[in-house]
Image (cartoon, rainbow, N blue to C red; front, side, top):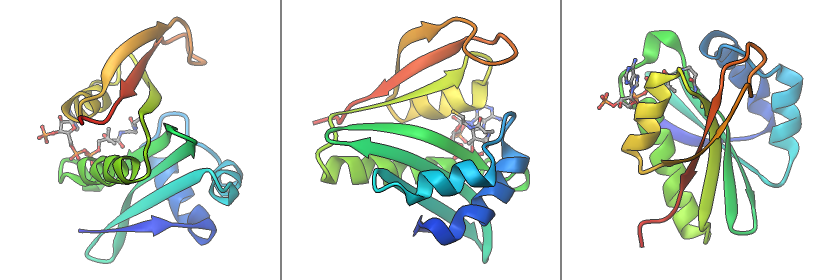
Length: 145
Ligand SMILES: CC(C)(COP(=O)(O)OP(=O)(O)OC[C@H]1O[C@@H](n2cnc3c(N)ncnc32)[C@H](O)[C@@H]1OP(=O)(O)O)[C@@H](O)C(=O)NCCC(=O)NCCS
């Protein structure tokens, strides 16, 4: 597995992965727009030359947010999302981020387990947040020291 920073040129690759990974995928345009922002930091994970997982984050001053994260369905349970989140946490530690946020569907057990393994804690509930009426948990992360 190799993890590298992603940039504007990776929009189509990330959109292809997002289309098969996410329930409500961001469009290629939305991904490109995000990648063009100076506040976005993104990573791609590849396995044997295959682009397999992605993480887009946003950072403003000492706060960060997970925008989208996904692993290709054929590449799951190999630790790719784990590795991407570890990269993000190391980056946040090094760049003085004091708090990170994200929203996750309350029925997304894989993602909830993943985030909780990484020290994210539930700080709120947004009722009916998703288009189908599903609630969202608000999760937060803080550096350990
Ligand atoms: C959630 C997701 C990103 C996990 O990706 P992944 O690369 O398979 O995750 P990893 O292999 O790094 O797994 C890390 C941990 O996540 C949890 N996890 C991942 N898949 C899981 C599953 N199907 N069931 C339960 N826990 C799961 C486990 O705690 C796992 O650790 P373990 O393997 O030691 O038990 C992937 O399932 C996905 O793309 N889902 C659709 C998109 C999505 O939900 N994104 C997050 C939106 S906030």
